[in-house]
Amino acid sequence: MTKLLLTVSEAVEALSISRAKLYQLMNSGAVPYLHIDRSRRVPVAGLEAYIAGLLTERENAA
Image (cartoon, rainbow, N blue to C red; front, side, top):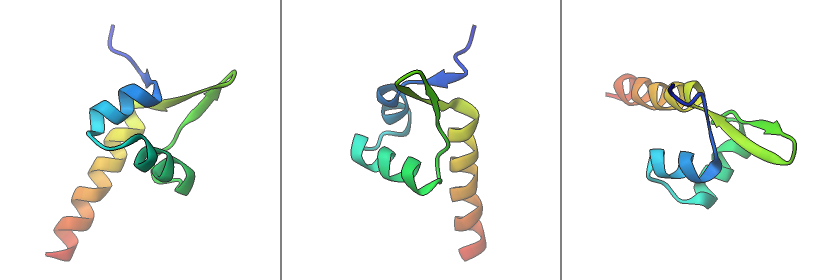
């Protein structure tokens, strides 16, 4: 079964960005996350939407 939620470490690895940058994106609302007990989990669909948004911005700027 494919994972639906990633840990912060897994999301950092998937995006190839720093942990600090991911927290910045989460705190700004650019990347959604959930609290499960005391842990943050990042939905894979949220990462895909973030990437799609970046690509759309890039296409519109061109």
